[in-house]
Image (tube, rainbow, N blue to C red):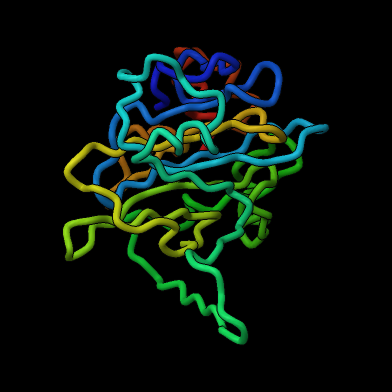
Length: 249
């Protein structure tokens, strides 16, 4: 879930899993409700876009407890980053070398396959023409979405290193982008940062099961299997939060 501390233009739904920027293009900072465990991914799906703004979703990690912030910064970049102990990048798939290149120097990046401990299919966003049934999902599993597209799924995690520090990784539609930042402290709690910025208007937290699926996830699969399409969930005699959970993967 998202933390109850957030930017002034953010509105959370009752479950604190959906964050929507209700006006302007800034003051859209959100945080994870709890610090992340090592290797735990905080995954969101872009639900709604807004035309007319330049810029995209920003993601990262911070060692600042949101509860300790006197004022939530207007921007993650540069405001929150300038406070120190914060690492944030725009989720547009672009990465930069840490140092300027010398004339003729080649910058090579090798992205390693990492075992995230959860089904990769959960991490992959796929477009659907409206809220069609899960019966149709297989038709879209191979669909490759741009990082900033609606339905794209973007996550952030940190991986501890032998020297006692950690590397931050950003995962875009199941693809590990490699270490985006190194030398993060592992002695302090690290919270996920999600900046619902500019052309990104609304995002939703996607639950990630590690190892065996949770009972909650299994119940959702049973409910989805016995309905014609997900719009029919609205008519079921279920609590509103359970309906919301069943309508989203």
